[in-house]
Length: 527
Image 1 (cartoon, rainbow, N blue to C red):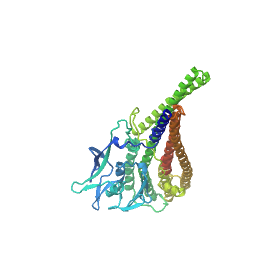
Image 2: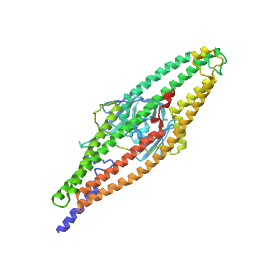
Image 3: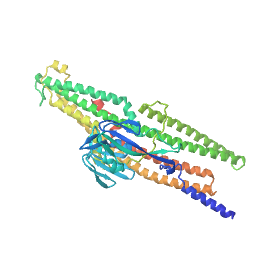
Image 4: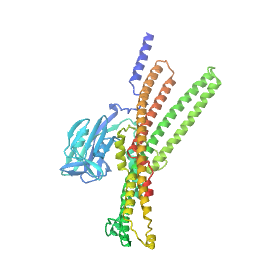
């Protein structure tokens, strides 16, 4: 009877272990329904107003709602944000003006100027067509109902749009929440960027200079001049074209700075997440070696371990303790770097949303991608415009000038102007080649990271199985409890590798789509 009872207890222990959620698993562990309460919280928008309300909390958005063909229109990105879909899950195809939204297992497709909407392959027709306003895609309100199943009401008398949302209230005070998402940090960095403020002011300055140069231009020259009569007009026109180029370049630099901020924040944000992962792993390793050192010391006192083994285990613990201290310091440095970007106090600490998604939204056709990227590059655009200006200075060269006029206008010889134009064309070709080579190498690296990601997923799943088996062996008495801790450490290590691979891939994908965020700003030197 005793043996049967013992056997039954062991079996129940195994069942309990297999049925429980592993605390160290990567998947989001959902709370049991009895621990959650639900209430309705209205989200309210007003036509023509950029502020909106979530319950009693008032927030701001970039584009105010408006009415098109008697249909209220809302900012798509604001709707997605409310529904819990991050920017990383939204892919914009400028060549087709199409947006792909990755929502759980569904892919949502929507295009500017088309009323047809695709959700997981199922096509639906919206009340009117989406459009772009002030750089934001605007969608009809029935998009919310068709995609998310939320009934949206519109009161045409009060001009109020209402979306009822279920608000989850957690009764478990120990539930982990976060203070900031990546989108929050990116917005903070943009709002506080001195470089961006300076660049926007430079746009206004360049605009004034360009307009002034345009007023000084009496006519548009069509050919080179043969004597000094052509010099003032040709010089004024060249000056206007140069100032017009600098104005357009200053506008493009604003967008380049935003792209750079986006990458820098992503890099620093991931740096904090990696720092947290490394600290957690170092703490597990330290605790494990501490327990091993304790057990070895007990064995040494009982004569089952040598003095050398005892000393080795103590040294191993001291080493992991130092590794943990270093991991804490590295994490602190990561926080300080992110704080500096978003203009928070250096010592401020917070919790980040640490969900990392594998953002596999890159163009696989490398030749097509190179063509697309080079057409969007401000660096290449600037070099191309500089080459045109050099050619124009050759075409509008004024010959037969007196020496004093040549000195006054700093006129280089005609042959030198021709060489300048050729050099500008060579420089343009060289940078295009650099883009070509760099993108091809990055394409290869991203494919390697994708393979590593698949391999890491397999290792992670194996680690979870190993942990389950270790729990069973410990429960039935086949292994010491320390073996379970070893399995936990191995699982956390594979989880860390998987997350780092995803982070490295996501950062590489950003550079793949916008290589100028890491390239040297040669156009600044040229202008």
